[in-house]
Image 1: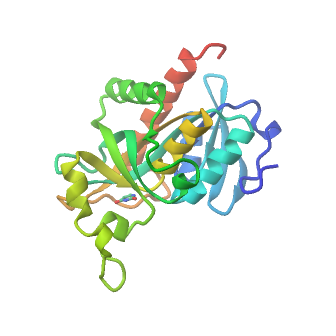
Image 2: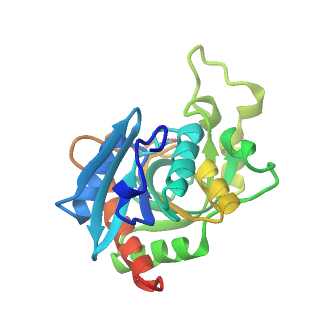
Image 3: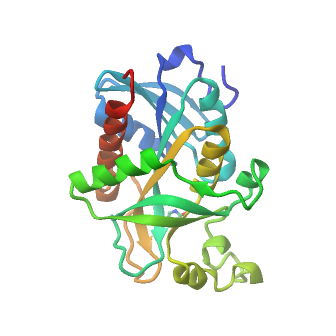
Length: 257
Ligand code: URA
């Protein structure tokens, strides 16, 4: 039995694929979207796990909670029970003006502005998505005719100063002052908080990991969405639809499934 997730390989019924939302409530929304008979396997702290079947193949959905430390726990413990393919279905804040709220961003690689990934690989090591996962995400977004952008993400360990939002008291330390403008100039598309750990560990462990997020806020236009709620928001609906389509394409392409 895995320490935090409270899952064992027997409970997974042979699942090798997983969706990783950040939000525990989104785990249920994803699993019941592709399988109305999906069942909740475990809940502990921020980790909520569901098992459902997509085209006859068992798929796990486990929430990571927010940030690198809890995301790394999920990758570690799921790898131990046999998961080798991960698609993060998260939310992010766009920093390029042309990106709209509810658009999807498919991350090809992440700036490692987190601490957790440094425990696994030196900072020179790239946090890049697995090409097969990126490819199916792009194909799915095209097929479903959803607005999407493909590129780089800054993965920060803090929601406030690391993403250039004034913390309580208002002072942003020098390291993070004016960084948003710098990331914009370097053609980064968005900020989020989990892909740095996910994509670094994916490569270090030899797993297939990819990441798509729906945009909750544009930091330039200040356009905002509702925060996720009981029922999926329009952005979440798109995100889940594209994630499920991408996963079914991966399954179809994999030998022996
Ligand atoms: N998640 C983040 O980390 N930042 C945002 O602005 C929105 C979602």
